[in-house]
Image 1: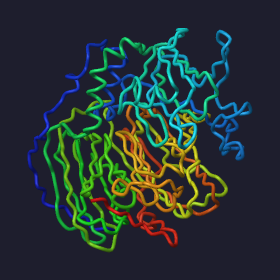
Image 2 (image 1 turned 90 degrees about the vertical axis):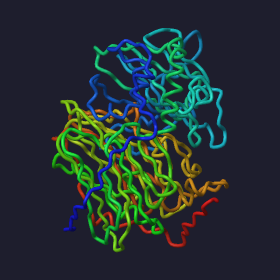
Image 3 (image 1 turned 30 degrees about the horizontal axis):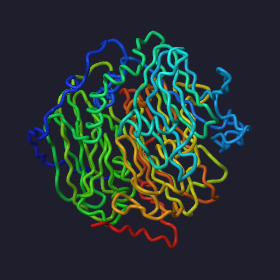
Image 4 (image 1 turned 180 degrees about the horizontal axis):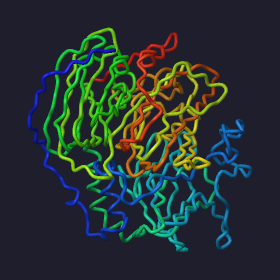
Length: 558
């Protein structure tokens, strides 16, 4: 057992330099009881909303070009079939083909009931061709005239109707998070055979009141859209609160803690900075622990908690930022009723200096309030044959899944991430979310080529091969040797569950080899909600070695 040291806390009142901006000030007049473009945009930048179970309940679902041969885990061949796209007549990885006025339309999504599209992803048709002639149409509520129509990539990549960062070009992909609500139904078609695609949507309860998307409303909400975009790109905590901190040495095999103010409250921002990152393994061997109301809800290596992976790999996101000076920041709201404690554990053999700060503000606990959780799973080695589903986490009870960060070690140059996500919610017979590739889940495409750094408010590739924000890729080589880190924090695509959630990711490399896998997972849950993840000090210290001959020499730009 590690010794626990309670440090004298430095308690200071902190009022943040930036003015507090209430979401009501950027909201437009709207029907309060209706889900609308406005309500969804405001929800996107309301960090408190996700800490309560949604009052307007929904389940997240997805239509994708996953291979239709995948029907049951009992059929191990079909279940891991990799051809998740359409390039010829034999490929039928879509819903159906319809004819309208003598013209064919490929149906990619057809949902009946109230809902909202909250994420779209489509890749370039070839690795170096960021355009297409394919037209996409989005029909709402049975209207024969599409509510949106345009180029399949250009409409949803930030260069057209929907502005950045609500839509954008990721690495060789068109990605959009702009909400498209509908009251009765949604059908999405293309005028030619689609390549890969993912359309992620909320399926609301039947009696949910929805204000259906229209071009007119889209125009009216443009000032709000722009303001939301500005907030996403400047993701500072805007709540005032008390700052509790510790700055000092953390010895080898030592644990130090800060105690949070008692009573109803919430952690609004948490930051941690180490004095030295010269040994990249320090972000795996230093672990963050949190307890709320007597329950340990967080036990995760700091690199996997903040999204940096192994080593200091800076990026900026809405919920987490890793700065070039080594400051790692988290902005998920973490409420509690009576008590809270944050601890840092050094599992390594060398003492380190740490600077830990928590900003704690007010919170009114109610029946829908939930506890923030973060857990970690690691495994080395992971054999890539036979193909397998690698479980991120399985949750039992009620909660909302909000994100993850995956770090892999690839012993070969060839691409490692063909594996699809399979997400089962509330005991369903088939996963309601079945993906098309690990890189697609993390919102980029053409894995193996797309090894450059990228960042966005809701997803990032902080590290791949030797590249990160401090050492950008300038060549066209295809090499995924060594560590790669991918991270996704969910916005409107959070996943509520009432009884269970299971998230698996296929291990599907082109090479028969032994890889390393480590994932941090994040969710909110009731006191009774449980997971299959427990502290694993032994595996934390089983850090996958870099391949023989690999030199991780990142050249920092001046």
